[in-house]
Every structure is written in C-alpha cells, then in structure tokens.
Length: 594
Figure 1 (cartoon, one colour):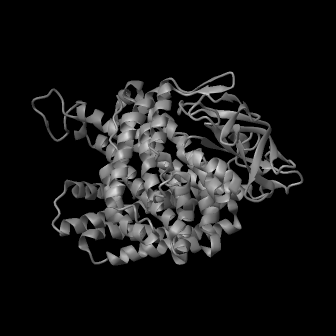
Figure 2: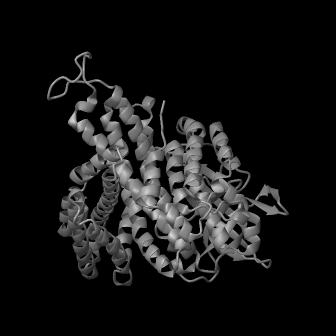
C-alpha cells in the first residue's frame, strides 16, 4: 500500500523562513492570508489529498479510464475524489471573488499542486488545465462568456481543456488545419481534429469547455494566423445545458505506459459553435499564457512524483535487511543489517531527496514571483516578469528530468521489488515519464531558454537573475560557515555567465551550436539554480542555530545541502565541457549510418 505524507514542515520552512511570504502578502494586498490561514489551508488540503485522492490513485492505474461508444468513464473513486475537492471550493482558491474564489496568492496553489500530484497525478492534470482555462476566460473573453463560464470552471463544476495538436501538426502549430467560420450572430463554427487532448471527454463534470486553436478564412500564414476559440461540449442558455452535444465528439483514447486514469483523447469538431477569445489572429499569444502556467504545473509533476517515490522507497529500505556494513556488523541481533548501511543505497536516496527539496524551493520562489508579477509595483513587475520568463523553462525541463531520474533511482534502490506493482513505486516512473514531453518537450524548452530567453533584450532577463545571485553571495561572503556553499555557488554562477556568452556568440554564427548544446546548458543552469536555493536554505538554518534554536530539521537541511554541493553540483563540470564541445560531432555524423 502506497504511503504519502505531504511535506508540510518543508513548506512551512520555505514560505515563512526562506521567502517570508507574509511580508509579501501584506505588501501585495493579500491581507487575509496571514500565517495561521496559510498553514491551516495547507494542512486541510493535505488531509484531503491523503484521505480521498491517494486511495483513488490505484484505481486510476489499474482500472484506468475506459472508452465506449464515444464516452469516457473514469474509475468510480475519481468521481468521489473530484467531488470532494469541488464541494470544498478548493479549485477556486486563486480565482476572483466574483467567481466564487478566495483570491489567494499563487504560491499557495503551487504547494497545492505538489500535494495533488503526489496523491494522484492523473486526476491533478484536469485541475491544472481547468485553472488555465479559467484564467483565459476571466482575463480575455467577452463579458457574456465570463458571466456564462468563468465561475463554473473556477469551481470545478465544469472542466476545461487546451486543444492545440493535430495529427500532422505538433510543435509546428502554424500548419494546423482546424477552421473557424464566422456566423452572423457573432459566433463561429469550428471544424477540425485535435489529438493528445487531456481529459477532453470524461464523466467528472457535466460540461467541458475547450480552448481551441483554429484559423479564420483568409488569415495570415503560419502562427500569425491562428485565433483562439471557446467551444463547450454542451451549449448553455439561461443557466441550462442543452441535451445535444455541440458537434464535439471523442473518437478514441490513447493506450499509454502511464497515467491510465487520465484519458488522452482524439477530439473531433464538426461545425461546433464557439466564440472568439481575445482578438483575431492572436491565439498563439493567448495560448502561450496558458501553456506557460501549465509548464510550471508540469514542472511540479517532477517534484511531486519524485517525493512520493522517495517516501515509499525509503520506507522499504528501512525494513529491508541485506548484507552487512562493510566497516563491521551494525546489528548483532539480526541476520543482516539494514540496507541503509550501504553507501550506494544512501547515494541514491540522498540524491533524490536533495533534488526534490531543492526543486521544491525553486518552485516556491517562482510562485512568489508570479504574485509579484500579478500585484507588484511597476518595478517589481518588470523584475518578476524577467525572472519568470527565464525560470519557466528551467522549472519545466530540469524538474521533470529530475523527476524521471528520481523515480528511476527509487526503483533501483528497491531492486526487484521496485520493479513490481505490489509496492507502487514503478507506477510513479511510468506516470512521470510524460512530463518531459508535455507542454513542449524538454528539448524545446532548452531551445527556448538558450535561443530566446537569455538573448531577449540583449540579455536583460539574465541580468535580473545575476543581481539577486551575486547580492546573496556578497551578503554572506564573510560568514565562515556559509563559505562551503557560497564559494562553489559563485564559481558556478561565473561559469553560467561564461557559458551564456559562448552560447550567444557561437549561436549567432551557427545555430546548430546553440541547438546542440541547449539541453546540457539547461541542466547546468538548473543545477546552478538549485545550488542557489540550497545556499539560501542553508543560510536560514545557520542563522537559526546561531540564535540558539535546537531543531533536527535544521541539522538535516544542512546535511542535505552538503549532499547537494558534493554529490550533484559537481556534475556541472562535465556539463560545461559538453557545452563547449559544440555540435560538430553530432551534425557531422553521416545520416545514412544512423
């Protein structure tokens, strides 16, 4: 039986000690969210995840969602879990008050995402998508659409999807075939086929609101001619849903290696009635707003499944006895010692734990930056926008790559037991494997980082990042206990600056150099960001100890910081060498010999 204990203590540490969110809340106008309120909400959500969502995860994997005669049926326990969150108003936490929401800070939603993913990643996907649809409606749709759809979607009574990919058009959306024909009443008739659409058909809610990319007649070529349309499964009038489907049909769901509870649908639109969201031919810009939010949520999938895999593999290791400590028997009263005496077992477990907690800190920081971007002053918004732009591909790519590595290590540390379904850990690897593919593959994220984000406005984004990094290092320069963190951090920050200059200068002359090195550059960047997070966390722990606080939590954090700086960060040396090696060994290999 899979166990999961939401990392409440770690979030308390991050929110209240590392990032001081209460001060930020007061400054940004979140006055109703004091420490007691935040802690209470996190604890109540954690309890709901443990008691309702976690038990449904097994059904999601073993029963899965099924397709019959155009209808998708989710496991019965999914409905119970979903309805529990809807009835509690949890999905509307960050929504506007007029739509039934609490207008909570966005960093709180990040924490909620992790708990939901760890408990049932398949079910969590529709919650994340629906939030993105709500934000598009509430920020960009006409008032009549806001009045009709925003509250229902915010509360989770109706769900939402994003419909981009077509059979012939994946990353290259400029060649989509879906069409939108204008009607005299201001609506449009949408026709086309979309594939790989998560939860495009299901029985969790009475209506599904699709955000569909399509082209108007005589629109410009490529992505500049794409518009965004709201297309409901059922039309609504005077608060009542039509009994006739709005020309939206599901023709099948994919058979996948994981996420069996999350139906991945082929969706057909046959003159379906829809409405324009935003301006004509601006669909890609708006959809990227949603995609960037989903990319952050996808990054949390690496953290969430890495955490639950770690907890269960650790519990197995504590009970497993095999061999003896190489330095001498530890437990004379047993036939073998716990496998925790073996250095390689500790290497795997601690690597997972260090990456989980470092990534969680980075995700929390980005959550606070989203709040600054939403409510800060003009200067704060400029700074936050630059950092969010830069860190979004890092969170999405690096955290999901680490999620795959972490879940794989958790299987490995358990040996044959990890490969068996009885213990549940193998499911987490199968489930998380989609995360590096979703919302733009990690290779595309790396190209976005290296080819756009670091070069935008002559490197302005990177300057906004260098300032807090170098300021932190300078502030802690004279602290002897911090030097083992700040010195390697400084070396890697300088290395990042040098690699960035190399990527820009060489990439301008040969884009293959930039593209061939982008993934390794992103990993170097990601490790450097986690080093920054670990140094910040270590600083808080050291200050607490200086103040006389005796808490094993701080001791464990400092010990884990040592693991990161000695076991993980040195990987950057090899990554830097790979970036510097360029692209020729890749591109000059004869294609006929591949």
